[in-house]
Length: 139
Image (cartoon, rainbow, N blue to C red; front, side, top):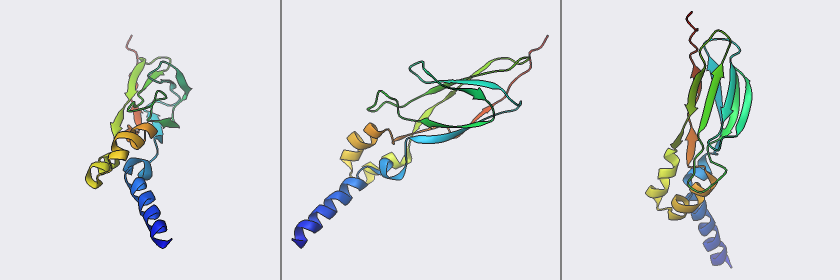
């Protein structure tokens, strides 16, 4: 009985370790959005074209790095910033592959590398923050 328990424990531990990014991080992250001018109107659109936020700077948003369409599909957000007297600015909150994801290669976590981390989206992270530099309209 002890051998079976030990084998099961080691098996569960190996499966958890084989998905390094899923164990170490979450695909949801807080992204601060700041600007050099107060109260800039911002609109955040996901890559499917849906508006996920409308508001003003400064703000901190919880955004998901994993796309709703799932497997090996990171999210990318477009920020449209506008304010009277200033040029409209568009910027992107882009995705990156987490260093924790590559831990699967080092420890031989093929399950985490090909299935768990890509499916959960935890292999991705977004830009750490957005700094909008609004330029006045020249007349």
